Image 1 (cartoon, rainbow, N blue to C red):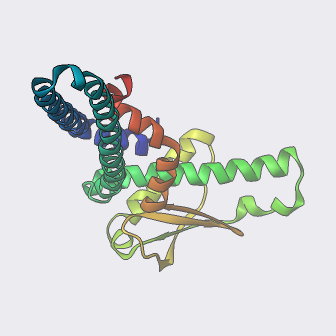
Image 2 (cartoon, rainbow, N blue to C red):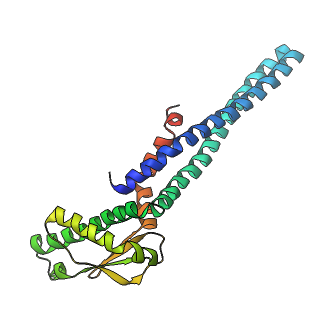
Amino acid sequence: MNNLELILERIVSDSRAEALKITSDADLKTEDIKQRAEDRCSDIRRSAENAAMKEYGLIISRAQSSAAMEKREIILKAKTELIERVFRDAESFICALPDKKYNEVMARLLADAVSDRMNTVRSMTEVYSDSEFEGEADIPFEVLMNEKDKGSGARDIITLAEKIISDRVKSKPTILLSESSIDAPGGFIVRYGMSETNCTVEVMIRSLKERMYSKVAAELFQTENKA
């Protein structure tokens, strides 16, 4: 599990109580629908006991179907809103991390992005002898950050990323901070030769959402799913 997934797990944990409340509120509302149907049937039964029995069954059946449908709609709407908020909160949480922790998270993301590209180039040149990649091993990586990160922690992020990569592959890449800036609240873009990897927080959380939406939904609403 990577750093972003660990952060998401924390946000999900904080949201579980609200998910249980959503399910509980939906149960209360559907019980009210059923109770009103029961009260109506009682009135009918008192006025015309025999004639009312058939209608009684129909009313109860319709009320149960209506209650079940309304419960599903209530939970679906609330679930969608809560899950969307979980991912928004994860993005905000990362951007608001203390400088030291934020730099550590960014450094690991940078190390992953650079390592992946280094491995790709190595495989294509050494294993497949692809001439298109020849010489890329000597090209420096260029990192684009927003103005805030460039001024505060860019050097710490790059230095830590270089150390992480060196420990992994025993080879230290050249990573340079670009003079250009990006318009993003957090994260960075890595350029290497003709390739570019977008590691802005917004894009990373969007990717995480695509992979983990179902898991987050199951964890938040596991009680409701088992019902």
